Length: 450
Ligand SMILES: *Cc1c(COP(=O)(O)O)cnc(C)c1O
Image (cartoon, rainbow, N blue to C red; front, side):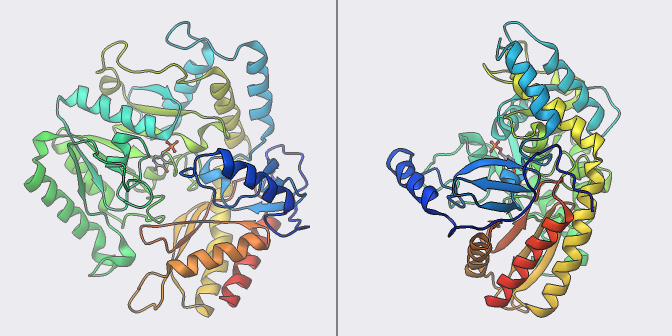
């Protein structure tokens, strides 16, 4: 079968030749521990030498199957041909001028692509930044400037970053917020439509959760005080929660009716990850502003806020920006990543990954009741693990044990979820189907040994 590696020359195979992590990784880990701040963690301390397609090679000569994509970043692979070619050429020409000092075409071209690809056919503008958190912060600045209001509404299980304002927007205390307060004011959290755990069942969840959220906003904040409502169309760190059908359209309608800027945080779910350019397209949602990062630039740091021209233009000249925002090498990489997504039709590839994964996981769920829920879209798939399918008591130990067992066999998987009990799968969209199935074999074997 043909392998879409996005141009990576790396052998697309799993190869385990030492314990994982191996001796050279352990040596480097000791040096790292002596010099890198303890607050910066690593899921799996194998030190990387090369990565591409669906694999990560380490210093000990192991080749791991990658079900993480560096947290949904390397959707086109970690060394995609078009990204390497365009970024290298840019690097040789100039590394930086600062767009706010003397501009360059790549920045403008990325904004043109964002206007084409994001939902809605209204006039759009963009501003570029370095990280997802920075994009979210700027979306709030823009929404406040436009509405002349202050309050920001976010949701249970939401994740928006680690800076001071985005910590306040993020739901989960440990590890993101614990000990790091005080947090930014004028942030209000309301319920989200988490179908699997909704008391009256998933069928009723969308409309009921929307009614609760809107009631809280109206009664506790006042719609006329709200600048922005920010939501991930598929909640990422919170556990790959797809808001139950009807929830997002109801919230968008409420925002529209009340002059509130609706912001879709597509930093994890965007750029073909869910089988569409953006996850909010699934229910025909057209956000006022959309934040992107992660998958946008094939691994180079780049982020964006894109939205209605009249909203984007409400911040005064000089009010937005940053020294490195929209760095030329990162912009060139983004153009290469977008070219790869189009040429390899990575939306179709994400849908195929969903088909393969969900079919195999459904068979596993029959055998292993620890799998309470299978969810997600495209190549953003997760299983929520429970102690008992009736009580749905979360099983974070099972998630930890499974991840560990997979790592030992040379499959990189990540966990997530408010309760730490979700195993999430974010393979590069260019992963070969053989590797995908081999990864699923490892998960199945690990479930058997649990
Ligand atoms: C990762 C993430 C962020 C933060 O992005 P950084 O680049 O880590 O700052 C914000 N929102 C969502 C939905 C994310 O997944």
